[in-house]
Length: 54
Length: 294
Image (cartoon, rainbow over all chains, first blue to last red; front, side, top):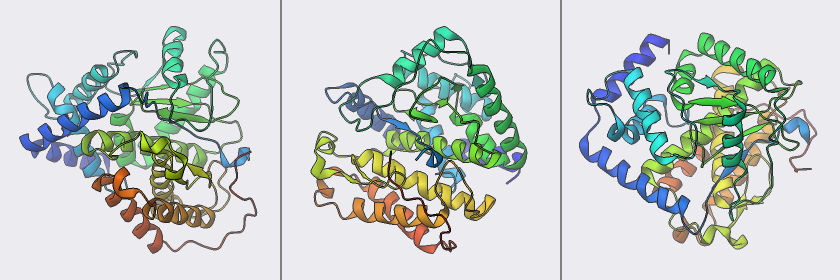
């Protein structure tokens, strides 16, 4: 996909956002913030060990 | 995730999460979405410096680097492998950042869709040394990429590094949209660990799940764009990676307690990975290395 097409697709997505999905995503994100920040101290560090290092 | 679930689906996830943080004029184009996304990141990560550029910021400011390192070095009871970023050693940072900047320019030119998704997903790239790792992502620093590229990496390896880390970030964002786990306290217990796709060892399910998505995305990227040349240095040859990823999918999907651990979205993505992996036609391995961490 060329850049213009990628930008057009992005704008098409922005034009199609619906309030219910936005509200659901917001609620889920808040739930995750609580999970990450709470007792679990869930800081997930995804580091990359290069294959060549083995 | 870009190829696995599609460019549009990932843009939608970022847009849905960012929309409540948009300026009064709303989300209209890339610039307004990038600004809203940065506002969202600032709201969930107030401990981090927040770039306001409408492109990736390559940050070499020592004060900022110390704050990024603190976020990456933060302790977690879900961490099974210890890594540390060395603060105070900034001498190689400009050169390594230049390597990343050059690779990013190549991606934008050759793979515009991937380039645009990188431009949106990452707000900042920084470099600090580490004895253990070539870079990484952290749930405490979404939109931030830590890069510690080796001098032996070729251009194709550096591109795979971008794909790898972008996948981690997009999975974290997908989790913020859909939720992936019922109870991560359960994930600490070793009986709930699953085999990972890249290191090939038992790891907490969140690490294994991420590794499955990273491995699948890399294989799809090779299949679609760079080919299954087995001389890759950052990741294993395709045949080895595919077999390991299939074992990971199996391990995750057959975990005894999966219904107490996974939300439907996690299962949906793991099944999708397995289907894509099964459909790949990967040449037989010529490499002899086995996937075991040192």
